[in-house]
Image (cartoon, rainbow, N blue to C red; front, side, top):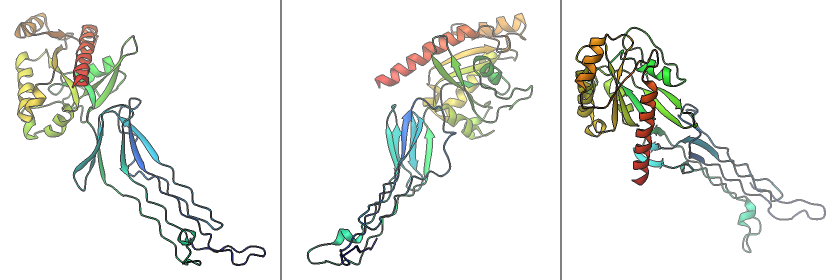
Length: 313
């Protein structure tokens, strides 16, 4: 701002234009209090700095905007395709966009050689970035299975999530995340992934979209429909699709559930368990809760093991 002081008995008091305030930054902070990115807006804008005023009054700096995101979130600049930062721990911060620097008023240019500066500096423009914000870990565990295997029913049984349940396949079209609450207040997130079909690794049936969600989960839970034939082949085909998409995905820790014990005949139950002889499987019924408690105990053990190993790394 260009301004000159005019006062009583001091009509030529000299320059008194104040500097402008700096603009605020846009900052992401890792937190364990949020579980997803649904609270983010499409445009995030920090407060702008105030203009300088006469009488040597400097403008106020703009307030920073700080958004909490889940731990494990990755921030990437879409235009440069470069990673800006990764929030690996609680309290980590990533500066996504810097605010502009405030300009100088004409008082700043006062010197012995320049007693009446008539110039002022415009403030700098803040950064504008196009960002891709992605959760590295969507859930601790993911339910994997063929369409209509009972994954959504199981998620409804062990959490408060309410995915759609129906008798026809492909009821679930997008992932649903539920939180399993234990008696000691421990919590584990479980994701219901839409059903995979043969050829999913070639993006048949939106396979790539569904498989990409599995890479953001620590362990896999294979949900097998016990009422169908070739029970073991169901899991083998699922493993094959995972391996063809990404060998590292197929090597994730996993456990197997034999679902729909309530409608399977005794012969189907015996045949299904015999096919998995030598493997640790959990016969369950998502509808009436049979075997679910034993499964949840094992799930917690595996999640704690996976978390401890990732911490050591």
